[in-house]
Length: 336
Image (cartoon, one colour):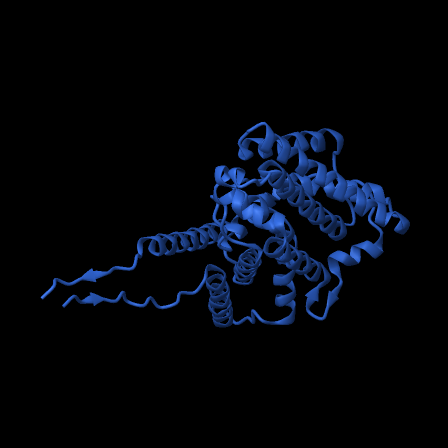
């Protein structure tokens, strides 16, 4: 008689996206408790508005960054593109309400062209995206530093409402960012190009042999990344009331990459999504708000943010290793 031991049934595990939203809830609880012990209220209307306002700018940049990272690429020029876009918007508007549609179109065109240049050099010339986008960013920086000595242009008050108007406690900019995120989620899940992005990031050679036009897919990701940076530039212009040539000094691209990685998207590409990125953006916003309310030293704040990001990525990596290491085991008994 031969006996066969059945493999143990593995308990269902939370997906990465569910895990990051659970982490967001945990950060809110811990942060709220810490602020309450200090005599404050993390969930006061003014504080909630501050948290949501912080999500908007980083959110736009992180959504586009998710697309390129899914393709196993990168874009270090988004902060510079956002600064350039704010100037294009403000100078095109020139204080005239009638020029707003033209300014928005001009920003999306310019930022899309920057993304197309990044994509073309990376996809068709084979240049590493780190070098490509860093070079593009430095070119834009050089242009901004030589052509603009300070703020330029004039944003009409009507458009400035994009940066300050709220629907209850929710800023309009956050609503727009979430709408863009929803569109990106649909794009990745339902469109052919979205599926191709996962394939290109998973294995470029296999994707190419499967008939996917990998160069076109990578180009599309970079163009969309550039355009979301343009949207961030429009928000900067709305908040400042003018174009800001020095906005790139805030290193927005690093916050965007941190939010994407914190949201569970692998830097090696092929796995992740915008839904997790939105949660990553929210976690960074909550942490920054808590640190500001508690008046934590800026250096210590950066250290703590770094610890949180490294810990999160380490947890994702460990889960990934555990998932690959586990295999059904069959034990075959001896015949008796």
